[in-house]
Image (cartoon, rainbow, N blue to C red; front, top):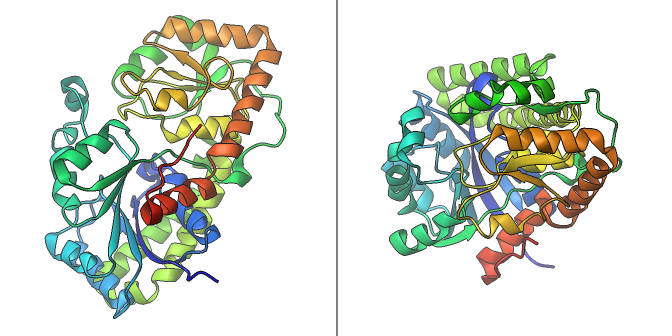
Length: 373
């Protein structure tokens, strides 16, 4: 019987649900389920975004890790900036250290104007990559950048969803309009204010924002922050209970999110900064809704993932195009159902979390490049 891989995973999490809701379950704690289903023995930690008690957090991690060694370390490195001391510590824990890049590294001047932090993102990530052996890149263009400029093995990372989240049958929508759920920034404002689009697309509050779980999430994070400030050894001791509580809440919140995506006749993804299909594309398909999203420029591999007009609907850069696509779905419900069914089949065969992790492990161990279509 093959030896179980022992893997240390450090996930990014945000201190309050207001910001945490934008960081998908499948980009962090959802990986735990995929790793365990592929036979891994994992130890997880949570790195809170922009937490002021980073030194205490490092003490908590060291306390929990002790003298253990691992086969691999997986860490988020785009939104999490680590000290060199901590990265030195991590580099001694495992021969394989996998950096996870859930965002693009390069942005144009207009995007940097809206989010100035993007100007330094590439340099911050490059500094941290010096301590890693492998990298997962959600943006296919970053693979060459990392291999050529950083000398690391890099893999294009295609997002997956938990198989249980993919619908078995298509449910009737509540509204005869498409839906968009997400923050408004940049070009999105122009889209939602377009008079024709506003008549056929709803900007819905996510269902996950209601109920008790966002409050429990915030309370759990506050307790952990208090432990980090006062007694980091205690935070390390109770780490597994903390991670387990977050995992439970994240699953419940993700279920509510998927249910909320079922309310409209289609899920619209408005313009976004990341040069890849974001998680909402896969989540909308999992919910059993046609997904309308912007065509990706200069990303030929990503554009092969789903077949246009059969599994997904594309627009270029205008609200009018989205209006036309929504109108088509309103007039012919059979087209909407067929696209939804086809997309769900593609997800189940190619884009589950278990399959995504299996392909990553195979690439690390054998060098096999995944086939995503």
